[in-house]
Image 1: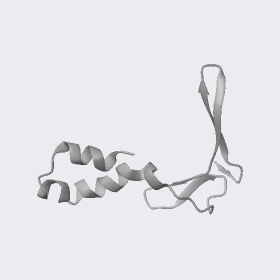
Image 2 (image 1 turned 45 degrees about the vertical axis):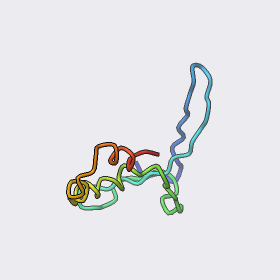
Image 3 (image 1 turned 90 degrees about the vertical axis):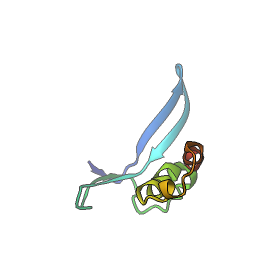
Length: 81
């Protein structure tokens, strides 16, 4: 799908819509070639704490987590928001 219109996602509690979110997304294949998008994918975005788990992933993949012999609670804290 290629569309300049963002997806609109509604979050509900029971029968009531609690909030609506305009979602801008880009999809790439394994070669990093863009295969689809929705919304203004050039819009500056600040993910902040939403990607803490991804930031912690490199901590594990590089071996740093294991080399410091940290407890599992430290990894959980690194992923926490």
